[in-house]
Every structure is written in C-alpha cells, then in structure tokens.
Length: 149
Image (tube, rainbow, N blue to C red; front, side, top):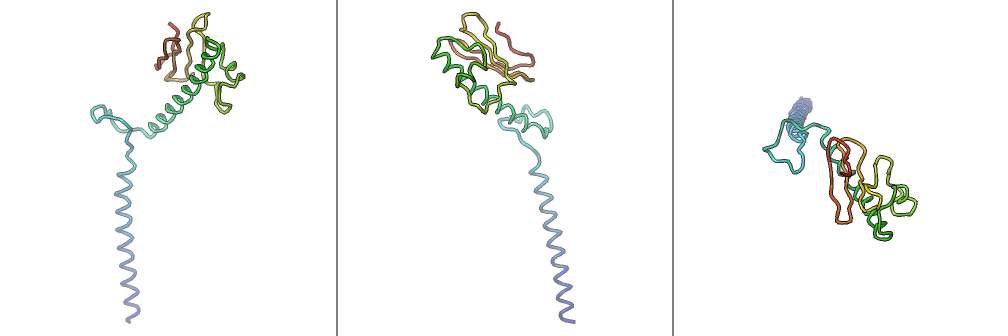
C-alpha cells in the first residue's frame, strides 16, 4: 500500500502544481496583452487601445523613413544641379535612390517651373509628406493630399 499511496500523493501534488501554474499564467497573460501606445498621456486615453494601433504606428514610421530617404536623394540631386528633379524616376535612374525603395506609392511634383520648390507625399490616408524648398523643408500630414500652395 505504501507505493500506491506515494503515487496518489504525487498525482495530487502535480495536479495542484498545474492548477497553480495555469492560474498564474492566466493572470500574467491578461495583464500583458493590454497594449500600451508609446508617448501617450493618460489624459488623452480615449478608450481601449486597438490591436491595429502598433501596426499603424509601425507603418507610419516606415513611411517617415522612406520619405527621409527620398528627401536625402532629392537634396543631393539639388546640390549637384541647383534645382529639384522632374520626377522620382529621374532620381532612380541617376542613382540617387536606393534600388530597394518602392517609389510607386509616393507622389512627387514640382511646384514651380524654376524647380525651386517641390512636393513629396505618400499616396494614402493620412497623407504624410514633405514640402521641399531652397529655404528648407517642412513636413505635412492630413486627410487630403497636400498642395504646393
């Protein structure tokens, strides 16, 4: 009877351990799955964080990185020729842009015939972009496409 009693006590102890483990994991998982956004004040918390918020934040950061990369290419072109390029394809063919950069989803246009001002933005909502000028660059963002005006 001694060995049967030991087996029964071992099964009961293992069961209690598993129940404790599941309860503890359930507690910690419920706390760790509530998403927190970066740089968000508690005062402007409008409710629960959506599961897509981190994805949207990551996409926004990727767009900003692409815009910055294109801007650097445009500025290098500008420093060599004294004007902004006519198109992003002109930048690509001149070797001013990274070959892996997808420029098809970005709109670029010259704002004047002298080539001293240009507009670059992502063609999706919210429209993020840059107004390029000889005096400096300005970031733009909004629900409608930016204009040169």
